[in-house]
Image 1: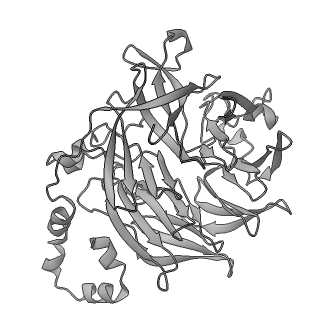
Image 2: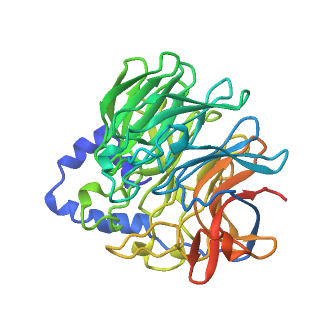
Length: 450
């Protein structure tokens, strides 16, 4: 039982308010014991052999924009960070990558002296007909000599694989794009949160975009999820959950809370009001168990399960930490870094996969996963056996290192796809260097049992 689980109980919350003041002073100590009791060594430094497929372009970064579709093809949205985002398709049948579109060019943004769509920050989603959806974004990227307000805004975009056609479904809203994306397949609705914190819904058939109200302040959660009834869930500080009720057509705040460790430092000490370490980082709906599985941003990358149909507002359970095992072996829990977005659920085989950050957290100087020189491990959590397994250090068969990953998705056959940096043999193909190591973004393929 976690402290956050107890606080989600309304009777407990009433009782908690009646406690004398000195009891509250013991909460950090209680949490420290609860979360940081000694654990056995869990680090596997043997290689976890993966395959890599280099992307054809020169994109430098990506966040969450990876999806393995039901037909086996894999879609990736990569970030130009000032140039243009690119949308890729990988076909396992032909073992080939191709760029479907340069998004700035597709949206007609080039040559106009305006900021362009340099990001696809959301994980693509799929409808019942096999169409793939994503949202373009800018997030301030581009030459500083060009007015940042000149960007037209993010667009809802659909890719039809049967016709190999990309379609612009319209503007989300003027001047804003979306971080997360979710789909209600029954009602044919898309949902996204702008970086100003507003929840938008697109009626795909009518191509009407509707502002459903503000659900968060900046810095917003990077992932939302839709359940089997069309309800959409997101997270906001501190460890709270909001719900868009599909039947009522409105957003409500829930009393349930995701696991949260108050003894771990926030990642934004200079501005705790926008600290996202107390919310979830990535989530997925499990159609088999009718539950949401997710990973927390901070608090040591806690894997949790949220069952929205259990009780009036659902039930949250903490399953364990998926942070790099070296942080579980030493008494330095405050060094546990911020969670990346490389989180994936294999519903059919009842497994969760995650690539945690290996860089120690430095107070007041948060750094992204890209550029981290440490070895990165692939962590698996077996939902049937309720156990964590360190699958080892990410390596290619020829010994090349794989670095920070910021996206993951499981294919229908159980293949795990990641997107991250891998060493390239020819430095001329590098888009990033860690020291003298030449790197480029790759699709990384892990085949369980191979």
